[in-house]
Length: 236
Image (cartoon, rainbow, N blue to C red):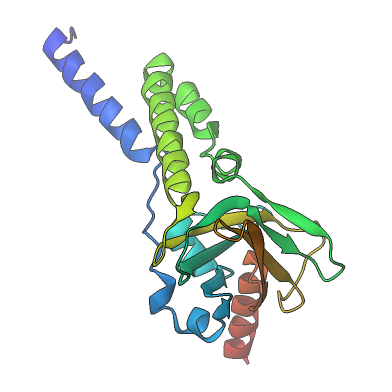
């Protein structure tokens, strides 16, 4: 039976819509300011009229809300930082002035937000699947969707970073930075520190602030073990 051109067009449009609906997507929320976070408030530091807070994002649920991904499993520790200038002069903030210190005092520099986003890009594996299933008709829109989603991820991660530059009196900078975790699995951050270096423009000298980190690191495997233990208890 001969299929009309109109029906062919309708089928192609329907197919493309179906492919897009099953392709890569990205859903995230903007992190709340640390001024509303009671845990961060409890660990606030005031040094040389600089008020600073750091908040390691270690739970899976929060990571998936903010990044739509489990970054701990990918080897990255996200840390939200907040710096308020209470001095009567400008101070300079540079993202590279913030480092993570291991219990052995090994310095871990930040990994750029763009680099982390690129490392966590959506895979094109599903594009291959659509190609097998639907040929070139499946490949083109699927690849376009993955590319578009990855650009959204990269833009969002970059937008979450704190903005560098001069902090005027009363100025506030806040955002999220990423640090590469050691290869060995760590359970807690209680022995880790974060060092922040700012520049006092009036005195032309550095301001050094050290935070002791806190929080237990939650791995996906931990959650699976907890679910398995709960299931075993229910079976008893």
